[in-house]
Image (cartoon, rainbow, N blue to C red; front, top):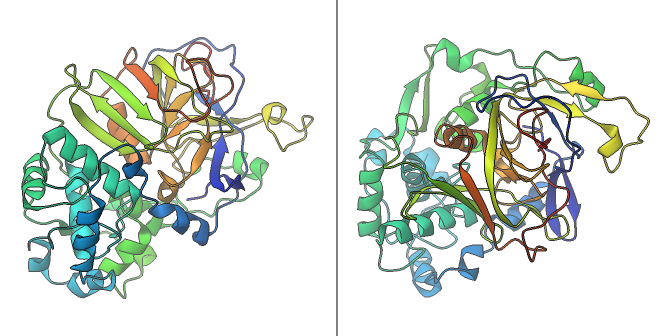
Length: 420
């Protein structure tokens, strides 16, 4: 997927989200896909070196008592490599075998992949599944251990943690499955997306550029991981009836309760769905505002949910575009600037939404908006509604509840809201 990122102040900056409210009437929650979203940003991708530097910074240790000594010991005893995913791919029994435990630290391979699948199915999302330990996986594990009071060492998966995870995940027999592709799985069209914004506006939809990209979203995985699981297979050449080995993330159990409110952490780069008693039921990594263009701080609420919104390109509010350029309406789709879902907040110009670059979620900064992978925001949108309270905490650059600029929302999706 394409992304809108620039490098600024040593951090990766995703498309900014400051917009102007529109005069459209506010539709009901769960609005139809006619909402239009405005945003600031360009279409530059960060280089792989920059993203890799952000992958595992140990940010969970800043606010939680992660047992770094136990992590280091676990990493030293783990000889698995990412290449072992390819070795084990065709061995059905390998994906029923136990994980290498204890598991933690800067490691990679089949056991990390299995842990990520369990976390995803248990509604404690590690973001994009890739078989590599990183901040997102560690944060999801820590959140699960704290929520369930399992594990001897925080930030290290042990047998007690994995048993609890497996139970919450529905006790799947296979963590990687052989999926027979359907017509829906492989249907396009798949088209290259031009860089020029006005050329994008001429398209019917900002859909997937390749089948590999679509399958990555379908199975919550990086296309690179899917390629490792299907070595020698042309992912873009697959057809209905072909078999694809992929993470077993479909058919996960329903949430174990009802979400009463949301909490978003600026320093932790996560969003939590909390039960009435404060228990964490849902966790997902997020991209939030940087210190120089932060997300809001304080308590708000969801005012509307729009699926498959358009993107309203408004040069008058874009930082690096001449004001006299023409507006444009870019069509919906997974490669839209706000992804497949927009949830507007009662704070004008802010919202929670998807992304066209799932591999950057949790590892980059926005200009005030709250981004999730498309699959996580779609899951969350089905668990909340207009009126659900949202609280922002530990937001860098904010000392109180006031804020200016920021996300915005779909045109008319909520009173006073307007972008990503």
